[in-house]
Image (cartoon, rainbow, N blue to C red; front, top):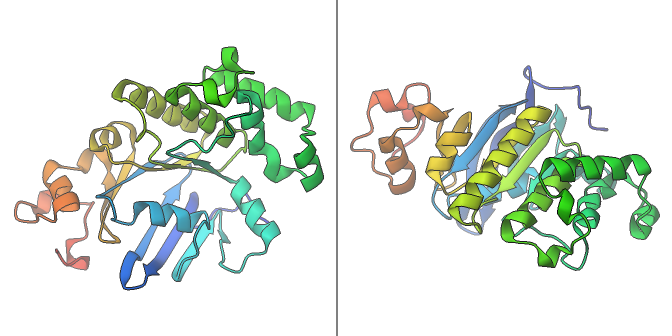
Length: 279
């Protein structure tokens, strides 16, 4: 079934996840996770290393196959048995920004960004790099919008870490995605550059009306830049609410499992205590 960008289930839901499970042997990496994201939302997932954040994102983008549950994008099921063509079509609508950039370092900024259009092209044209003039113009405009117009033809290997991540952002944006997924996009960057990159991701997503799902370790950045925060612990969602409802005691529970000082006020509208057994 072709992906219909105008078809959203449950109102304006871009992404819907229900009962998602992914196990590696006896390890429950993702254990019954469910949530939805609406158009324009900036949602950040936080939690300790090994909480299941990256596995969750890889299940959504079908980089790994889930064991149970359902995932839908704009009302279309992302099935484990999708054909290669269907999978490629789905992935054009999910822009992915990686922690380690995933650039081709011998190629220029412009060439790396143009790779974001490959999913829309016949294989032979993609191999030969025969991009439409309209796509080239879009690439230049996006490169300019992320502040790299002066590095347009510079090799990716000659860029700083922050500049490399700007290229990754531009490559994702030229896909014209409905969902932007960012897996620890600032983990390899210094604090000042991290702030610049977070501001760029959020401003570009808001300007284009793109739903955004970000995996972060930096709780302060999650609070500052998100409209909503999801906390994961041991493969489960233990917190889901507006960023300004994430209290210090909620953070302590997400990261340490300390529920001693976790009050009803902390969980109001955010943590369904009766549905989760404290560990």
